[in-house]
Each structure stands twice: as C-alpha cells, then as structure tokens.
Length: 468
Image 1 (cartoon, rainbow, N blue to C red):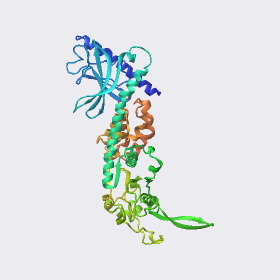
Image 2: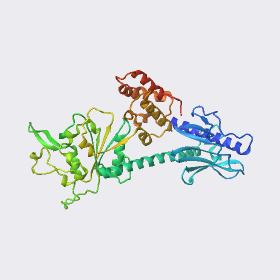
Image 3: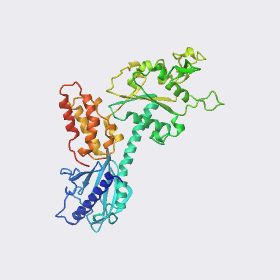
Image 4: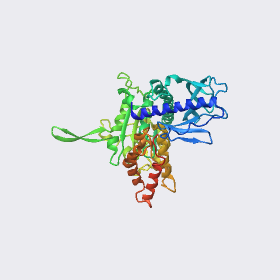
C-alpha cells in the first residue's frame, strides 16, 4: 500500500470520527449545536468553512468533500431514530449528481453510515454500501482497520465508475461522428490526449464496445488497426506506394512496394474466404490513425487518393490509377479505399511546422476540438490537479497576464505525473521546472515582457499550495 493511499485512509478515519462525534452532539444538545466540524486536525486538508451555505469544505486524495451537519433547520431525525438527509458529507460525481455518506441514528447516536447517490432531477438512489460504526474503530489511535479501508474504497469507487462512464459516453459520441463522416481529425492544445483518445475510439469500435483500452485487443483485432506519424520528410512513397531498393546477387535494384496505408487497405479488403473470391468482409471496421497529420505535406502524401478518401467515393467506384500504375503487372489495376476503412487524424493547433491543409482537403475531414477541460475530465482523477491545471490555463488566456489564445492551453497529459499526489510545492515543482517552464519559455519567446508573463504563470501555478 502506497504512503499516499495510507494517508488518505488516516485522513478519512479522522473525518468520520469528527463527523460522528459532532453529529451525535448536535442531535442531543439543541443549545450547543454547530454547523461546522472546526478546523482542528484538518490542517493538511485545505479546510474552509462556507458560512453562506453552512458547510465545511476539505480535501482528501485530491477530492473536495462538503460536510453538511445542518440542512435548513434540521440536524438529523427529530426523535433520534432513523435517517434523514442531514447530517451528511459528499463529493460531486458530475453536474447534478453527488455521492453522499449519510447517518442512520438509533437512540440519538449514529449506528450506521451508508452511501446514497443524490440527484438534482430525481429521487435519491440507495446503494448497497453501508457499514456499522462500531466496526470502524473510529475512536482508537490504531491504524485504519480493514472495515474502514473497504468503506473508503467503496465510497470512492463511485467516482472512478462515473469517470469511466463519462469517458465511454465521450468516446461513443466521437464514434458516431466517425461512422458518419469516415474521416475525422482530433485537434486541440498540446497534451490534450488526442492520440490516446483516438486509440480509445479504435479499441471500442474494433471490440464492439468490449473495451476502450487498446492493450486489451486480441492479436486478430490488432490487425484492424493501422498507425503512422507524419513528419515533414514523409511522402507518397511511404504512404501509398513507391520503389524500394533491393539487393540480389550483389546487384542493387528497385522493386515496387505498397506503402503503409495501401497495405492496410488491402488487408481491410480481404475476401471472406478463399473459395468466395468475389465477396469482401466489409463488416469489420479497419481504422487508420495518422498522428500529427498537419506536420506532413498532406496533398503530396495522399496524391490522387485526394479523390478516394471522400466518403462518397469509397469502394471500387472511387478507384484510381496510382502514380506507379505503369509498373503494375496489370497496368489498368485501380486502387480504392474500402468502405470499412476509417481515418482518424490528430493535430496540435499551434504546430505550424507544415501548414498544408487546403480547403478541398479540409472538406473531406470533420474537425473535432478536444479542449484542455475535456482532457482533464477524461484523464485526471484528482479535483486538486484539475484545479491547478485550470488555474494555469486561465492565466495563460487572461489578457492581463498571458494574453494567449485557447490554442495554447496546456492539456491534462502534462499533469498525469502529479495526479492524486497532492499539490504541495515539493510535489508539483519538478513538473514546473522540467516540463511546464520550458514550454512556457517557448510560448512567450520574442514577446514583449516575456519574463513578466512567465512570472505571472508561475504565480498562478503555485497559488494555494499545500498538501491534499
């Protein structure tokens, strides 16, 4: 068990202890009731009392918890038995949904803690997660026991499941767009996980929804995936077909060989069986990822495929003679892109190394923006890490600070190394020194008051430091 996880269990035990302690006092003593646990013991949890909403706010494991000892005028069941909404504490699952721990009383004492999902637009959702308070050993100085550890893990598991659901829904929407347009380009700021998202789309489509993890594909399913990364020297002969040097009996010659994309299309166009030579198995999707697509000279790389990649010209009717067709055994042989081949490109909006997308080429792709905020929801688990990332990006686009466009926002992949590790300076400083500062120096290179702007970014990054 990691030190970080052990620390979370210890902090959770103390929160439960104080929650049970104060809730029991409140329900018995009308004159001495308190809507707050007080900050004693929560020095490392960014504790704040929200007077307006009469609730405590604190952080454990990078997740923000809200403690409600009072709701309206209620501090719990009036007769000291059963369960009401108050008292409770919770964290946000998504907009309009919160995961609650609520108290069950018997003779004005909390005997059971249970997990309930609160919805803003429908009735509460009871779960099967509950524990008797006596089993938690809250009032000893011993380490958290197995019952408390299990209760915490079950409570936090709802957060993980919700994030998986959100990712799956996001992936499904992109799949629907890909099915309609055949060619999409995921564009966005650096580090927004565009390539990772493309791989999730591929895994889900190929496995028919079984997984979004490309590593879980079978060897046979992996044959339905193609991948290449464009760069300025990449050309038609690499992608479609070209002459390759060969050595035979100490003589150098040249042979015509298919490029990576043509070979992929031929694989997708395979026959259902050796006996059925006319029928092609086009039920399986074959998906080709082109990473950093805008770093290559698109028109030169695709050549005459410019026509065939149009969704309306997939299949034999969109067949074309390649530049090397005169070297084929059948000089009239035409190459086409099968109907079951899909293309996913990725590109950084700020990468201007090669800007070759003409309007006709753009028309053949659907461009989908992946924002920094989306990447945080897809990739990060810690609310504290998400807040740090959002704070830095706000400063970047603030006209009085960074003054950049949203194209320069920094995506979640940069922050994965600190996700869930807390936001103490010693934790987040290496990321600043090794990754973010060099990137920002490049961003502001040659700009007026560049040093001042970088200092403002540093101030935003290290604001409200402290351990979660």
